Amino acid sequence: MVAKAMPKLRMDGSPLKRPRSIDLPKIDVNEAIAHLQRALTTKQRLMALHHVQNLIEGDPTAISWMVDSGLIRILQLQLSYALQRHGSTSQELGTLCQVFDLALRTSPAGSLESALDKEAGRSLVNLVADAFPWGFHHVIVSILHTISQTSSGAFLILHCSKAMHCVTELFRCCRASSTSKEAVFEALGLLKNLTYFSEESRNILLDLPGIVGSLANVAVFVDQKGHERLSAIWRNLSVSMETRRRLAQDPDVLNGLLELADCTCSYALRNLLNTTISLSMDPESCVILVLHGDGIFVNVLRRLLVTETDALIRKRAARVIKLWASNDFVGPILVKDRALMDVLSQQALQDQNVDVRHEAADAFCRCSQRIQSPMPQHQLVLDAIMFLAEQSRLPAEVLARTLKAQALHPRNRIPMAERNSLLSALARIAQQEGVPNSAREDACCALAYLSDEAANLPKLSTAGIVEAVTYSRESSQASYTYKSSSGSDTICGYFNRRPTQV
Image (cartoon, rainbow, N blue to C red):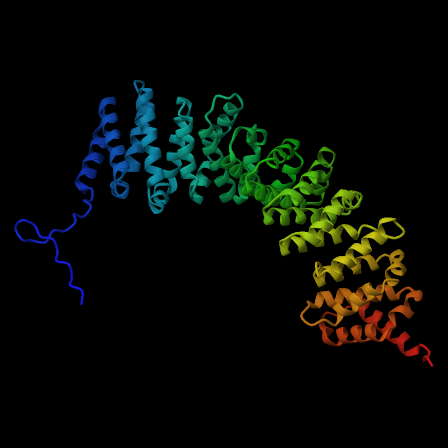
């Protein structure tokens, strides 16, 4: 057996233990709070503030005791007194704001919520905004940023005209190059929180004079972290239907989004594409995006699909194109872009990520629905669709939906029926286990549309197709439509009436 080590002993024979960390005595906190509360002169106030600051920075646990002892309320009273007193110095007000900022940033979340309750929170926001003209832009905006981290705080700031004036004034100074990048970064964080929490009041932000133009131009002034916050602001604003069209109709906003497209921050690019997706959900905004700057947004998406290493970015870029292709006005414009169609087909075949392949294939198929016979690209598009299907790069529901859309146009039906691989693919989907009923229904509808052409019936009335439409009809009666039902009747009827081969 291994003998246990004997504990070390003191000179008097008692065990020698490692000393525990000594907690900050609560009496020191109470004294610091009392000194700050009793401070009347500038010298007394500065000494008390430095004492409080040292306690907070020296022991992170001290702030909880201080907040419980009323630190936020006392700082608010001292700041109010200093702003109203004519003899206040810039050093005094600056130190007050710095300690206020430190106290709010380190306060527990629950304490901050209680400090912003009702009238107390409203007076606090107004008081902080009153200190902005003294020039402490970075500290003041940092305080507002901290307050905005709660939903109640964001509401108070958004409905305080003086606080919002601080934000617009800060960005105005930013354009004059008289504001630090740190202050702009804090202001972007503030606006990010405001646009996130104030879902029903986002129009208030867009109504602020000069704010949209300032945000559109600030991309060149900040670093990657700033790009991330700026892109999150646009993303949050574009979520609301009320603001979506206003953003798309502002050329400054669109140019600001294009500035973000050149950044290297993946999170910013993801937010940018989310913004574009939201804007594209409105038909009129979709048209504006595609036509802006002679199609520069299309070029950006094509570039991201090819060069971006983040799979999520490539997937979202393909999704934007899919939304655009569904628009009746801009869809025909996209199919004329040979470079875009080539990129979509290549990504659908070769992308390493399966989600990107499916999204790109779906986008390609949405575009292909705009191409009809006898357009010269029609045969090439059918070749590409069937090649994607043969390479297992096309989900069954996408293939069925695409071929149904193609067969909907009478001019496409005879060229489609001439392809045995296309007919076999539709028959396979119609009776394939595990595919959604909607895919079976689309496949049967496509066959039904093809059967409307009498010249196609001999090619459709094969044992495999008849078996497929019969199986699909029996296994999905609930979702079977009149068109697919009548189409299957036509095919089966012709199959039964055709002359028996000797």
